[in-house]
Length: 109
Image 1 (spheres, rainbow, N blue to C red):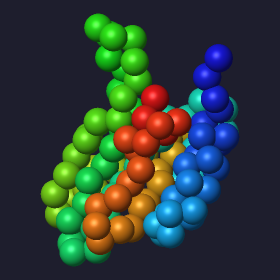
Image 2 (image 1 turned 60 degrees about the vertical axis):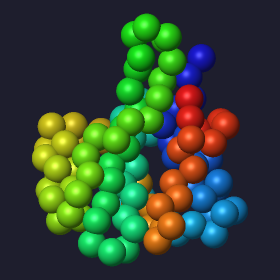
Image 3 (image 1 turned 45 degrees about the horizontal axis):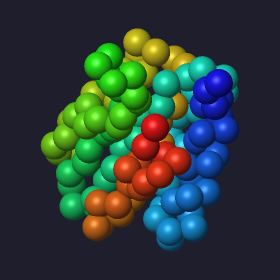
């Protein structure tokens, strides 16, 4: 059984707060089944966007980099994605060290 999007987002934000990493819900998607994008801003004008991807070979779900580069260009890509999918969640994480915690147990899959 999969977690709802809202439950996962709430747990992710709590984990980030526990690690003193600022994060914000930029776009509130569908509570039950909305896809989630995580934007990581390193506060130097650059950013990366992570998306959960399904690996057909292993059957696992992993976080992959969907886009990276100048923050303005990354924001434009996110806006296009939101145009295609109004149920999309967008979480913005701000951390100069580039921490996003998506590779930690409980968040990575």
